[in-house]
Amino acid sequence: MIERMKHVGVYVSDLERSIVFYRDVLGLELAEKLAVSEDLQLAFMKVPGDDGVAVELVWGKSVSNRDGKVNHIAFQVHDIEEVLEGLKKAGVELENQVPRDILDGKMRVVFFRGPDGERLEMVES
Image (cartoon, rainbow, N blue to C red; front, side):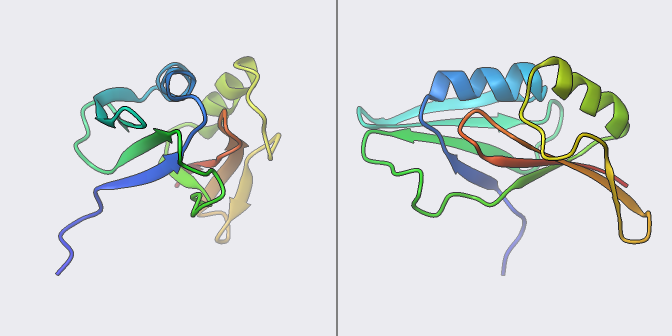
């Protein structure tokens, strides 16, 4: 029935600010930007070279940040220490100052916040 995941939608208060954050801080690329109407705009951010799941940034005059806001978006990384240093240098709000080991050390995670307070996670496994 389901073939694959397509995207994760996140409500944002400032579309351009969020595009800059996801591009410049997280390294995603803007795959597509659409104006559904004058009051609703979308931006799809993807990992470069990966046609997998996109982060859909949703801005609209009538969109409420409290309606179904995503709990978190997770990104797979190779070197979580290096990524964490980059987040610190960018002044990102961190939930974890050091990576947390989970699943008996099989994974290391760091949680942090995006520009609208959205919860994001980096995972090294």
